[in-house]
Image 1 (tube, rainbow, N blue to C red):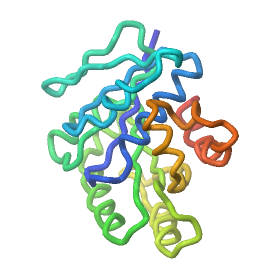
Image 2 (image 1 turned 90 degrees about the vertical axis):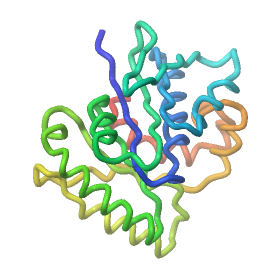
Image 3 (image 1 turned 90 degrees about the horizontal axis):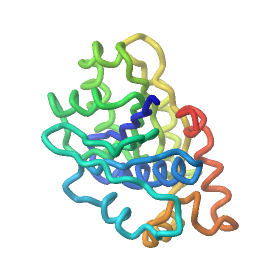
Length: 214
């Protein structure tokens, strides 16, 4: 059985990598996939979330990260990798090598957009890795809709190109929502928490889940 490895990566701190990671893990687990979560961030936010997870929800395995390698529970079908901030150079290349799909969350602020430009330029230097096997896509995260910052990020994301000359897929916009905070406090994903209140949030995930084959 082949395993799908999904890396959530952006060297900029505070862009929502852990939120994206735990919600993806929760989605695939409740979809019936044997799922594991690797928390490579020293802050251990994803691990804390996993420790809170109710026993009556689908189990999510803990993949151990050490020395640049990940030990994955046997039989895992989907591995979600939450990465730390300030990852560059060989460490960045190491995380790119771990993934089949690379998801880049970006925030709608001028500072974050400029940081994203530098990050994309660094990814370009990994052309040999990207061309070989890694799929990349971007997600606008924690967006306050109908703002100038959100519009600026959308324009930027639609223009990004990969080393192959193709456009970097810009998959979806995820709004800033208290539902993510409330779900995380209970060790739940947006797909398992208060269905009547999270319909719009879950709908925003559909393009990303389709891209990931979910």
